[in-house]
Length: 318
Image: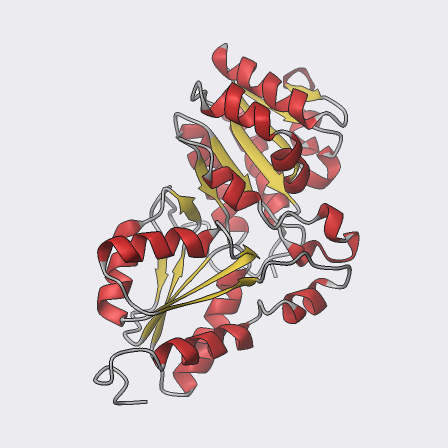
């Protein structure tokens, strides 16, 4: 296992601070958990702690951006998006300022902290902000690279990071671009489009499916918005069936974005792995991911369901 994506964010933020004096950081009393404290320790004159006041922090980030700074504001995803949404819309999205936001502890894999701390709708909220880039890295190398891409991007960005350690899927040499998915394998039977921790589960599912004679490709859709429509269209055209997997409510997240893209380009049968219109409960991360249907066996089951809906010719080998 690698480090958590939230820790990779803290490391990358320090790198940015050393390279660019205009990078500043803000946090809402959770800097040790979001790992922005690393930046504050090295650059105390460019670090602002606002207390438990996420809405004020968002407004400050907008003001700093308007004055030429590159602010990175972080808190738990559920607090940042839910409490700061009006300011995100009016102070950041509407004027399209160059501010960056990082919500940690996304999804139900935060475990025993309980449902009040779990962001399960943050991607939908962020996608609802016009002009926002929405990111969710799958491992530490992806996270670190995307933080640098955020700094280079001229406009507002939101990135979700996770609490638990994430499996290592990439190396420091792998390149990541905003809006360009990473493809694993050239599978022709089905495409699994996943984000965040679900990418690791999707790769486990891919291996199991291969043992059963089913050829699957996996798309790491680290950018939920703008979506890589070209990769999605290619997957639909070449595989004829798609399964999406996300640690998020099925309303308004990755699955909804992919479905919109598929409907507009090359309609094919789809299945959706995600949280089914409910909030979770307290438990260990492994218990919760299994109970709410987010692990590799659930992706395998979804693949088998969608394959039954493909055209008879395409299912001949099944």
